[in-house]
Amino acid sequence: MGFFIVLISFVVGIGGFVFGVDSGIMGTTLGHDTFKLYMLGPTMKNASLTGAIVSVYNAGQAVGTFFTGYLADKIGRKWTICGAAIIATLGASLQAGARNVGMMIAGRLFAGLGCGMMLTVVPVYIAEVSPPKNRGVIVGIQGLMISLGFCIANWIGYGGAFASGNAQWRIPLAMQIPGAVALAIGCIFIPYSPRWLVQQERYEDAKAVLIKLHGDQGDDYLAQEFIQIRDQILLEQSAKGTNFMQAIGQLFSRQYIRRTGTACFILAMGQLSGSTVIQNYQNIFYATVGFHGKTALLISGIYGFMGLIGQIIYMLFVADRWPRTRTLWTGSVFLCVMISICMALSAEYPAGTTNKAGPRAAIAAIFIYSAGYAVFFNAMVWVVPSELFPFFLRSKGLGLGVFTKAVVAIVLAQVTPVALENVGWRYYALFIATNFAAAFIYFFFLPETKGKSLEEIAELFGDTLATEQLGHINVAAKEPAIHEQIENVEKKV
Image (tube, rainbow, N blue to C red):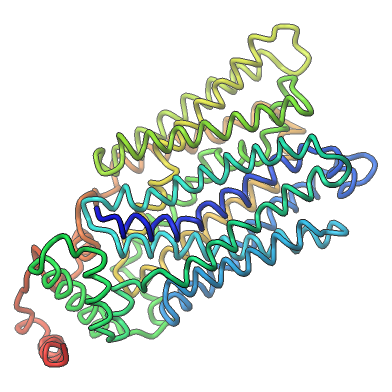
């Protein structure tokens, strides 16, 4: 695992940091009375409007995925990420300067649009520059940056409590800007994805990037890797074409529907695990067990550290060591248990109880839940979907997965405030059921992809593999047209 790969992965991983800050900052913002007074009126309560402020961010993510797949293939992964960072900067600026709730919602929409684009392209880019044996760790950098951004967002929100007036929430919202600006600038200096360069027939540029990425592996490895990437992309282009709308249709074809469904399911279950609900509405949860104001914000700050700790545990002990399937089904069972404990404690020790041990135990369960989610899911929900698709579908397929994730998040954001008001702790039963169902699906139906190249993973789903064991196979008998294309390419390079 070369230093250069790690460096550029951290640069584009700033996209995960931006998402972590943008999504985490609203949880603490909703805990400031000055914000609720300014946006919700004298009563400082409006469950539907609160849900709209949260869910419009997810709506922006959904919209962002519609054209991200096209842009990622047309102008390249790096410039799509750069454009997303600029849009996120605009969204953060609108939020920090919001004069009314409409302007705030518009800011959240643009921030979601930018983050939806980042969530689609960043894991694709990282997966395409990573060596197979280290892909879980490298793509996990995005999860690490998400956790770091979320942790910092919670402490920024807590720090805002010590400001006066509307600065309590305006300054924290403005702190979404630096990360987005840093990402936009950093994208200028990172290389193009070698697989995108091959698709554009920029073969010499692709070779140069591969040398920078994997030069320590030796000339034979580099030559074989280039051949494998080139031959597989040529095979896909000949068999499926390069038209964008044709590619979208292929996502739902018999050959690719299982991969499409798997990616959408994994990203949707990242939401239905309960993580986003707890993240965005943690201050409401803390209030249900008796903690308010600065105390609740302080708890939020400590809560943010749990995800960061869990992500570090993942990087050191789980990534590329545990099989992907075991990580996901074990994690689902773990979350199911922790939410069950939290639900039972919330039922037994509601707000106003004189027994402080119960509420503290409920918060401890939420903390352990957060750490567990980071260990098992925070990175893995991006690692596996980014591996499933062939090159010509990768950005579109992940875009559809992020769209599914965003739609589920929109529904949860709208439903959660109302559900917590009306059914309280019983609402968590939903996430017990969804985590149990996810564990069943992962255990019995998810294929193992650890340690395989992106081209080899396609073979697990029945695709024709243009190269085998990083060497040539003779495709002339099966695909004469492809054989002629490969010979023409060899003459060029």
